[in-house]
Image (cartoon, rainbow, N blue to C red; front, side, top):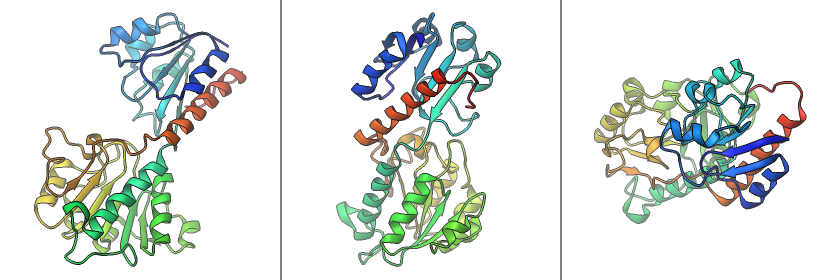
Length: 304
């Protein structure tokens, strides 16, 4: 059991999960606002031996070294890689602090968002229309870049609706090719797809000027990643250069700094995370609690 567990900011746990935390720590403190400075974070952690953090705050080396009692940092958000994490995992490892993140909790909401926006464009609802005549998903040439959980779910949904699925990933996936998916090198996929979906890890940018030239005009590009999968200036030129549409759920996914992308007439974005649903919060809560239980049961450090 922990002596003291602190959530330094809102971490999206459901009420039942918040109650469960008291089974794992003698004292539990849950902050409902986002700390503005490192000093505030340090003050909130104080003498705690366990911390929960979402994606909005950084726990860097200075903070970790200022909190000597820390044994455990639970990330209540996606942990794709050490490099992209908002926790200095290398520093934590040096000090014997275990860091655990979660993955794959909001994917179904993202798939629903993709289908909603795609149908809106294909059929011309709400003033957005890809082609002069309404189109079905049937026979649509769809290219998926990244076949993780989100990419695989999108591919399954589109194939069920009759789309022709091509994919590009770091490694070929023969087990998925048996389902009828076609592997294509990146540039070939961009040239041959009508709609492209980038489903990549945070901080992975694959689409630059050359890739947008291969993509060409009259296309739709979806980004389902947390951050941009593209060079933003190249995206702007692509949007201005033809009858192209770009779709993402949040400003972060667009890479938009000054509002030029989200305000573009052929960009669809509600600027609301599609993965933050009731069901996703429930799954997030289960995974956060599972990580705590695993830590408390284990005598050997778990890998981040």
